Amino acid sequence: MENRNLEKAVEIYTKLITGEEISAAVNVDLYEAYEGIAAVYDLVHMLLKKSNLKLYEYKQALYVTAGPDNRAFGFSNEDLKKAIGLRVNKELFLAYYIIYTAMLLFYKSSSDISVREYVRADELIAAVTDGMHAVSGEALLEVMSDTENESFKTIAVLWSELPETAGGDDGASLKAARGSKLGMIKLVFNFLQEQQLFFESGGKYYALDRFRALVQNYYDEARGRLYEILNEGGDTHAAY
Image (cartoon, rainbow, N blue to C red):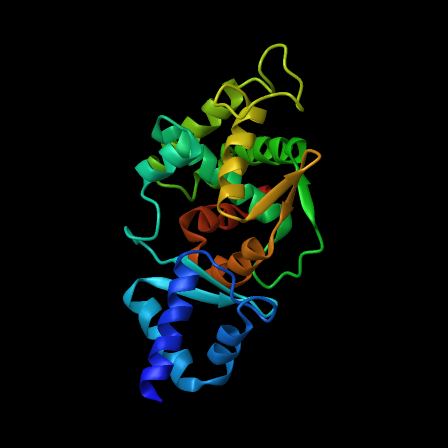
């Protein structure tokens, strides 16, 4: 029995880290073993903990994400620049801010029940622009360190200098690229689609269950200093 439980736990672990679905609809036997056999449940969590991975459940499905500084399963800054198609750190930090803004368009906190199904690129551009104006305001400058202040200024200048679209292109035909606001949005969301967090249809980015699972379970734990700064600034940036 112990060997059988170990084999089942290893099979669950292996499928999770290779991106296979385990849910009440797919790999049902594994999902039921995880849910119904205490020894399997404990072994799976032990394996994940040793690998610095975190497991979340959402709508009767299991999801894993890398813990902090997980070099085996996570991304370093250099890895992310290559994966998204960026060259310098300020572009990467802008990409982080775009992702953070997108998250807040769906959820203001992890306890929110989001009814929004999708977000459009133009909505993201407007929200990021509003956010950049807010982080440059006096209320937020008072709660930021000099280093944080300079970092926000750098990405705010980068964003402000980007045209809405590349010359001669409309939104539908514009390729994902670093040379415009819309191009940056597309670069970031191409990456998020590769990570099975969103899918795009008709110019709309729809949130997938994996995204919702991570936000609802991981957001409060991982929101970090950016969240603290924006909330310490008070109502100036309450929506972002």
